[in-house]
Structure formats: structure tokens, C-alpha cells
Length: 145
Image 1: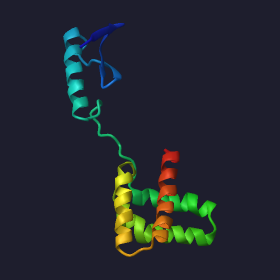
Image 2 (image 1 turned 90 degrees about the vertical axis):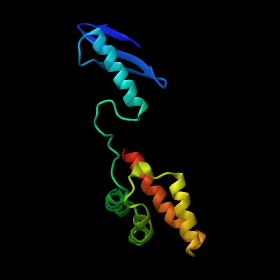
Image 3 (image 1 turned 120 degrees about the vertical axis):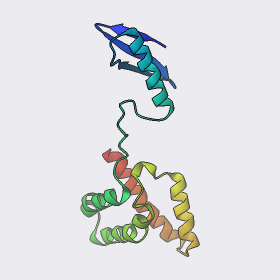
Image 4 (image 1 turned 135 degrees about the horizontal axis):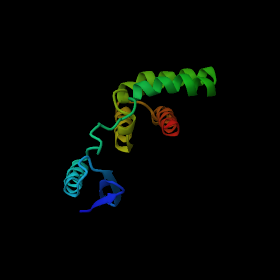
């Protein structure tokens, strides 16, 4: 525990899981900074953000895929490719991932999707084509921030 006075203000200055946190105490006393640090450590241990605001999860896949289709796919693909990507998104990807936040789509969800499509009778080549569209869409999401 370290309450530190910097200038005229008291700060909670500590490390939690290898990351340093230095946050100004709302109570400008040594005891206030120590109490503030305890509260901050509890919030971090519970997985909550320090500022009390929920972390933004970003857009959902359905919203982003529509934007991606109009900005990226339309500008960089032939009309036939654009139509195929729109079809894969509309028929397979948006129904499966549309309500998910982009940050929640991981390898496990993609593997479940792939196994489900193969079990429903799609050929492996078709599943790979669908996954190529998903990969490019998620890659663009990362590139665009």
C-alpha cells in the first residue's frame, strides 16, 4: 500500500497484476489515499473499470458487417464477389454472429460455427469460403480499431 503526495495532492500509487496504477485520491489526505487504493484494488479484482463506467464493448457483428460490406467489399471487389460476400453474410454469418459483440467472437465460437455448418451438410469448401469472408471482416475490424 502506498499513498504518495505529489505536489499538493495525495495519490494512490500501486501495482496490480504487474500493471502500475497511479490515481489521484478524491480525499486529499494520506488516509483518504490509502482508503482509495483499497477501493481501487477491490474494483480491479472484481474485473470492473476504475472510473466506474462500463467498458465499451464496441459494435455488434451485424452492425459492423453492414458497414464493412458497403465500405470495404463494394470498393475492393467485383460485383459478383460483392454479391457472394453479401449472400454469405446474410445467410450464414449474421444469423450466427449478428448479436455478438466483435470482441466476443473468438476461435472457440468460430470452430463451433464451422462444425455446425459441416454437420448441417455444407461442403468443407463452402464452409471455407464463408470463413474467408468472416476472417476478412474481422481482420478489417481490427485494422479499423
